[in-house]
Length: 323
Image 1 (cartoon, helix red, strand yellow):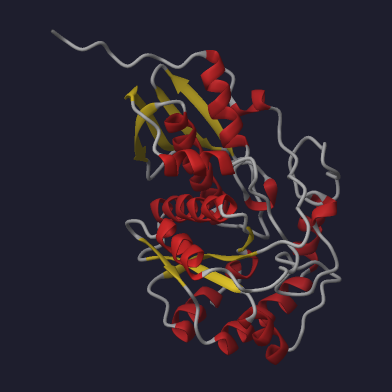
Image 2 (image 1 turned 90 degrees about the vertical axis):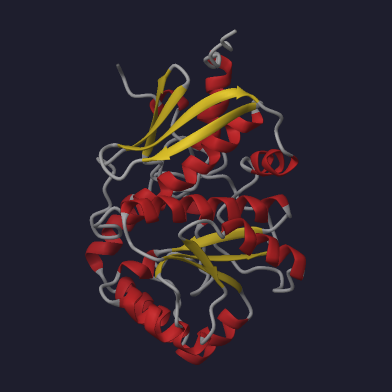
């Protein structure tokens, strides 16, 4: 007797998927994704019209963002008690297709990560202290180690400080870059804001590296002070063996698993990609820090002194393209 085909999701279940995807982190909170539902297949689309010409000219961060959304999508499917299989796409608007399978019990780990989706925030401030339990630190590294992605605890912090400080000074003085950044930070404020962009109250007067995003008034310490501050941080660098679109997707998905693991352990975090877009800087990082591949993102984490506000979100209806 032939087994019945997996049932399509209900409207309510599709809402669960949409809410999970909408809560993924993205470059400048641009939310560059949509969902196309075809029965038991869900395509994750990259909105290529979302362009940050100065910050992300090649669209690498946009694809990393879609990778993070893919992790949330898979976790939401599993939280609904369904199996799923994901196929990544190397070209076109569809970055991945998630095929929804038969009923399957949700694992405790997947459920905890799914529950953390709503608690994850970008903490662009200092942490209370740098003492993260060893077991928690190891769990974060393990959560990001997948095929083709390596999670590295950086050494040679003096060299890392030198490179990050140089990048910060260049970006702070780049007027065209700062004009673009201002567009993405000027129109969203408060806990109840709707839309895209970085909420103005999520950014403060913190210096590098706590600020995460360098603006015209961001204080930049000298290299020795910055090295000391990096030593007091918990940092992970996400690297890939090659530097293709599939690598960017995989790195974004791994980063989100690490971030959700952190949130499930009451840790806060934020991502630094801004300096990685300067010409030649990633190659210098590979050389100076002996990295095992191309650096895609830097993740800092710890215990937050105060909770961060959630970023504004586009209406859920905008996640589904018109037919």
